[in-house]
Amino acid sequence: MGRMDELTLRMESLAHGGDAVAHAPDGRTVFVRYGCPGDLARVRVLSEHPRWLSAAVAEVVEPSPVRVDPPCPYFGACGGCQWQHVSYPAQLAAKRQSISDSLARIAAIEAPVAETAASEAEYGYRNRIELRVGEESGRTVVGYSALGEERLVPVDLCLLPPERHRKAPRALAGVLRYLARDERVRASRVGFRAALHTGDVSVDVWTPPGPFPRRLAGNTIAQATGARSVDRVLVREGAERRGIAGVEVLAGSGMWHESLGGIAFTVSPASFFQVNTRVAERMTALVLDALQPSLKDRVLDLFAGVGTFTLPLASAGAEVVAVEGNGSAVRDLRRNLEENGLDADVAPGEASRALRDLGRFDLAVADPPRAGMRPETVSALVAASPRRLVYVSCDPATLARDARLLTDEGYSMREATPVDLFPQTYHTETVAVFDRSASS
Image 1 (cartoon, helix red, strand yellow):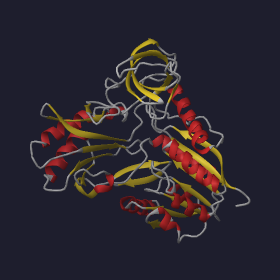
Image 2: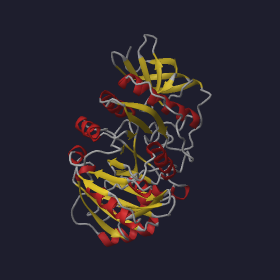
Image 3: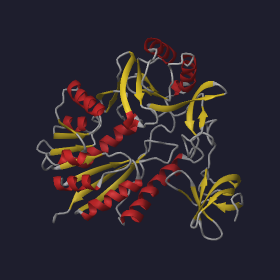
Image 4: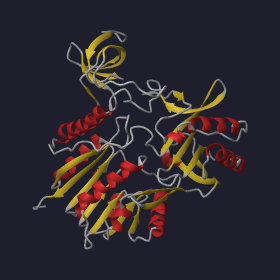
């Protein structure tokens, strides 16, 4: 079979990563870009491997009952969304199946997986978008990477922020194009935040360190976007997030304000905050319902961030210890506790090392990054001996891997609930509840 050969296949399911799954006549699995479960489609083979093929839809011969028309004019070119062509109920079902499959295949765990907790909004749900900055025909443009490629797809609008901010990319491109006439302005990324509850808007421009027209940039960006805060994130050339060299306030306070469940949060440019405010509120409620902390409970919040779970747990009256390694998030966490009149112990530092000196806990919540927990962190968490642990995961594979480690250490998964913070994409969060066995 040659690289450009075509096949006519029936799409069977959706895979984590966004592709539809089908099978070639020789039995190999075929991952089909922009396929939809139930489609009969002619597909173009992109690459071959001993056990699988990569392909893209060339023509939909018989559309699936769950195929819908994507509303975004950039869908199929822009890689920001992968599932706009799939009905929302089918997306939710696929995310639930992805969690079940990962737990069974990787961890050999057959725990109950609840139906996916849906987002109230299928579009307009993101409180933050982050755009790449590039050039096209000598003009500054902003956009997203193409699916599976480094190529930049310029966009004038995005359907994921709130409706009133859908044209933010156009405004950002225009103002950066104006500023780029000054050779000191070399932006690589631009972040746009718009709060659901407070209406607060902030813009972060990512540039290399060096001279910069601070006042001009701050005032111009604020006027063009309505941002109350404009910040410059200094990033070393070629570095990712961990290469942040500093943050400069160009206009306003340098902070962004939002609330979750009635609790106020102040977030600085280099700190992470959940992008779907309403679903984050629901996820927080799931965590608290699972833990059910009492006044006598000592509760660990591992990878605490700016306090998404720390503050509600402290508000419930528990004795909370928050562990966080990111300096910006630690500062925001402490500020958020103080501004809300809440009390918790904050232990800065790498998770496994911080846990060594913190003793035992009655309950714990862990919300690690996409890479999951290191084995030494799992061991330190097990040594803390919480009777119940809630693991909040943003990746099914690392959840399953860590679930296997926890199971081997005497914990059992009681249930898992997928939570859809990211409609129109394959990404999902999972709230997994573990109980320590009586013999452990």
